[in-house]
Amino acid sequence: MQAIRSHQATSSSAISPTNFVIFIFIKERSMKRRILSTLGIVLAAVFATAITACSGSTCVATTITPGIFTNGAWVQETSVTVNSTSATVNLGPQAESGGSWSWSGPNNFTSTAREIDNIKLNSGTNIYTVTYTNPCGASTTLSFIITVSAPAVLAPGDYNESITSSGLARTFILHIPTGYTGNTAVPAILDFHPAGVNASYMEGMSGWKSKCDTVGCIVVYPESGDSNLLWNGGYCCDGFNDVQFARDIITWLKANTNLDTTRVYASGGSNGAALGYALACQASDVIAAAALVDFRCVTGTDPGAAGATMSPSNNTACTCPNLKRPITIVEWEEQQDTSFVLYQGGVASTGLGLVGAVANIETFGYFSSCTGTPTPDPDNALCETWTSCKSGVTETLCNHQSNSHLATYWDPSDNWNDVSWDRMSTQSLPAAQ
Image (cartoon, rainbow, N blue to C red; front, side, top):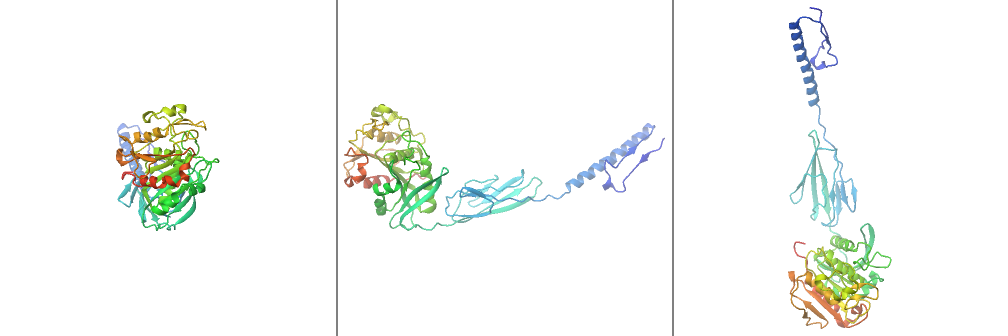
């Protein structure tokens, strides 16, 4: 047997494949087997030692970077204050990739998502706690505190307000009625001006300010963002997303007033009425009823001359695929108008095709599954109402005897505010809305 050269470390913890070198020069087969067997045992010990050293390392917890989305932006904070339980607040903490998240919060809230959108808020202090467990098993906990403080009570009077809607600055006049204290939820009317005039003009024309001071409702006079003061009500006049603007106003009212969210109504004249019909069709989840003057529903396609002969079941000028429920409409028309907004329908002097006034209200009767014939209003000879409709809604047509556009607003004898309020105020959103 020739010599065997070997180098061994003095400590097993220092043994590694790089410093354990053996040169074997041997001819005897049995001795070679014994040496190779010994070598395998030594190498196994080397790798076992390396694994033990790795598994014994410390698992360090990961720092969580906080993130709260409110008022349209993300901030690295763990606490914010908002002024309404309806405020939009998202929670989005950040950590290393991998790992898991576990949330707890008010109202038995739990989640395993990292980011939580539109968290539910209660009045006062809301604490949402998240635990992040990183891939090696160490956990970190962080709490977010969202405080809901009541806004200052607005005194009765007029206010010029502005909000951001669809990325644009939009404005409106807010009228808080006489006797408002903020202690009781009150209904509201969104009153949309005709084309070519502004919110201030509508405030002085429509009569809702005085009526709401009497019955106790908030009035909002939105301002068109268009250079020609037009509203986007359909094929008559596209432009800004004014349906979303109306929704954003309602959100603002919820945050800043004691609003009865089940009793928000739409009103408007001419092009403002076009938007009112669009809201009835596209926002019946937030609009309970509408009273509209001297225009028709134009959410579909221009019917041209065929508008004069259209029936409710084939009224392509007024399509409401997003209508969520039956909705009450109080429609006011100038019965002798043969030009601008033709009572009988057809092509108006503006070149716009419209359905007739009767077909327009009957279209909403069709949507609301109304049956039978309309009943004359015992308190106002100008009006007749379909009362046998689904979900307790009604559909009313009032014919003012004039050929002047929007003359209804200027004739106190028609009592348009009284009739419209009597019809609308009985309507509220279903509990599920």
